[in-house]
Length: 262
Image (tube, rainbow, N blue to C red; front, top):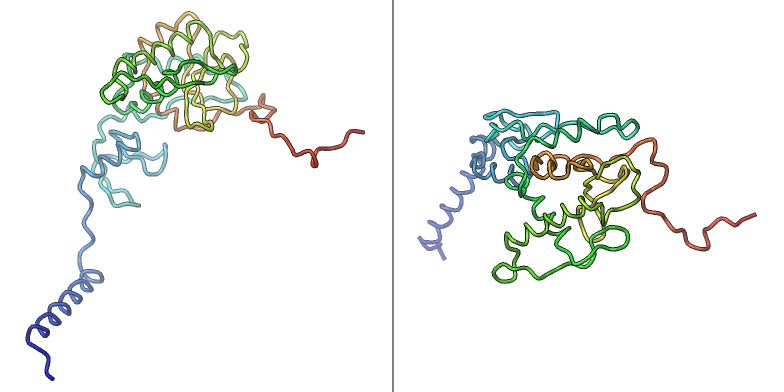
């Protein structure tokens, strides 16, 4: 039996579609670049609002230049000051603590916003707690949020920030020992419960320092802190140096593998 006309028409359409797709794949124009708004959202999700850095801190892409990897156009490249990686600490020398301290005091204080808003959530997670454990880490969480549907309200965020400030003022609930040098270190700690903020009163080797707060200038810090600087420090390496002689988390070997004395 001969094919029906409708079948022939459908076969011709399918063949034409396949030919067109093949011609576009091998000889047609390049695939369209995603819309700039999509790229902007991607940049914001990385925390690089105002600057897209595909190759690390030493590579800066100006607005309009394509990214060699993705082909995306760079957008919103006006706020380059937010993406200066700043001063690095040398764990062997620690000879630039004053500069490191002052570098974070060029802002307006208050609650983290904008590109540093992640720190706002981190402060809530770390300081909206009922108590700290004996080692200085956040302990029992307080889930009594006062916002709609039991979500955090702005008052809850402010309460967490006040607790953070009080701990630093009173030199309480910090990790480790006080070395007497007059500094409080604000540190990002990665533990079993995820990322939290903790304070140290001695050099936090093995941790990721975000800020130094000088004794007697705690009020000054919270009035002038530049949160985007702390957010960029969150993307740096842990602090190590010649004085770090022991792994910060002791490894307990199984009984059968322990060396026998004598």
